[in-house]
Image (cartoon, rainbow over all chains, first blue to last red; front, side, top):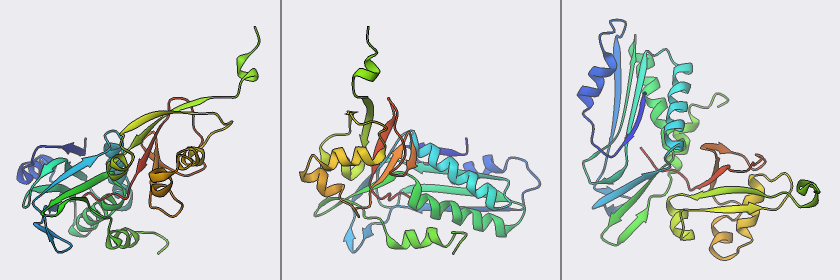
Length: 152
Length: 96
């Protein structure tokens, strides 16, 4: 299963080693790790709760990975997304992609992350000194998704 | 015995799921909803919920960024519904 939703932290090194296995066709591994900032929109963030829609989340992530496979020449891909209580500096998400060459690895990694941001059913609720608030979706994320639109 | 399907209006019962901010706004995470209209679709569900008025009408007003998932896949307003379908209302996602 190339996608996982979990409360536990992940060890990127171990995950990458598992993804690569002993496949000597792989010449490039691109990874992205998203982490929790201690400030968002100018307000200090003390912690956050990440929730998702069980059942749909895995399906949506699988669809994104499949779309990446169709667009780019990649060997394999892995997406791990954490849910539950997270604090600044914690890891949130890992995307890792293996390919023969760096171009497809970089592009597929960025593609998966950009699409995840706008389509995967996750929601962040931040705890700030003024109380807790649901994070607003960003226009920049929609723009990032649209750069992959085929009719752009 | 007469055929009740022709004698009575069709009833389609679906499960509604509310996520994140919408769950808090509506004060519930899910509910069953019986639709009494023939050939019900996603738009019919939204119409029933908006008709409740108050926070429902406000959160689901036209132009609000709410997506609908039918059985775990994003669906359009004209998607038809069947008994036992799960219809979820999703605020804009903010993962990653």
